[in-house]
Amino acid sequence: MERVSFGRTLKATRRELERLRRERAELDAQIAKLEHVEAALRTVAGLAPEPPDLSSITNVVRNVVKSAIVPITPTEVRDKMVALGFDTGPYSQFLASVHVILKRLWKNAEVLEFTFRDGKRYWWATKSMPAGPYPENAMLGDYYNSNRADDLKTSSTYEESKAKEAAKYRR
Image 1: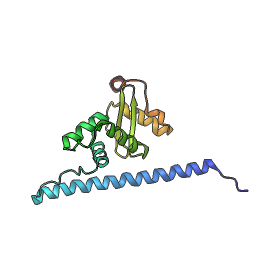
Image 2: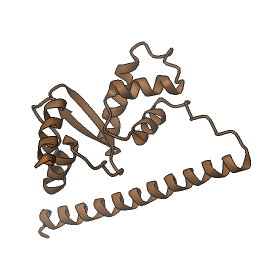
Image 3: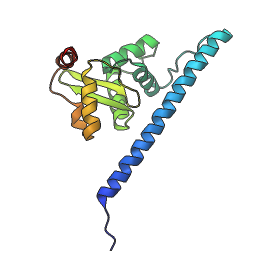
């Protein structure tokens, strides 16, 4: 009977996941660059910019999270979707729909979910975090060192965590 080495299998699986995530990040970066080039060429050619694709609620949520410059709350996602002109009429509980989609994106490892005592914040998983005294930076560093989802949670509020990180930067 063959002995299965779960440890070796786990290591190989993690290596493969990391390789695939790097490839996805590289593809996302290439796509983002080409989107910028396309936008610049449209401007030079005198063509009107294409309106954002508002046909799929999931794609709009993805685009809002991708375009965020700091981790974003579900309420902020909703507000940005409304500002883009997304039709919320068909949804009786629109914010609840946004929460469900964000949770699904988190389960699919498309976004990172940071949990604070006063709410959750989301960040596109393959996008680099902005530099600065953001509590998410410290949490993400712990998470990458341990691969424990609990490292993305804290019992502090967002403002308490942010003040704590800012204090570290002042030293």
